[in-house]
Length: 287
Image (cartoon, rainbow, N blue to C red):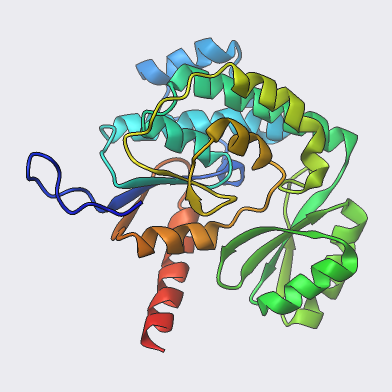
């Protein structure tokens, strides 16, 4: 994908990207600005249950809640046009809706199924995740290899997340100092973006096979490939077990001419990550 500088009517084409957060951006009360809005209430009807009072209970409820808030933010912002959409893990679904590749109701049902499937997989294969902050990525990769953990997220310079069985996550926390890093065990119930999520694949694939995908109005980047989706049915399923390459996604968007990023959804975690990635990109250009 190459960002066009003009549209057919001669107007300047957009050079902005929309960003949508993942499950970890949830907060209690994040829906308060949206209650009563038509799209929000329609979403609750589709779900058949309000996930927000149960958002502290984990994946099963956090995923539909974050998705619904993200889409309501996008709707409240006037459904802005863009040159691309970037979604962090769960946020890929909101990106596909914003690009017109997937209808809101279908996407919400898929996200609900995804949350259920991932929660069930986490119960079957208990695990966790740990953020390693400020370390040389090669040292973190070596530690992951030694402990048989997966580098599940490459979020930004100096921010990697490891995923795996809980006892190995605890060992990684003990040994993080060897890499010169700080470590933070994340409050999640599963080893997400690793093969521990294999049990969730069949359920999500079944739901995705019945979904009606259309050509997007603008490219939506896959977190696992750092390239626009080409086969969303297959990629959305397998992305559950593949690492999130967020740093590379942002770098790819910058290389295609994206000049600004707008985060829609709970929190501003992605905005902070983009600032760090852009700073690294400028250093590399000036090197």
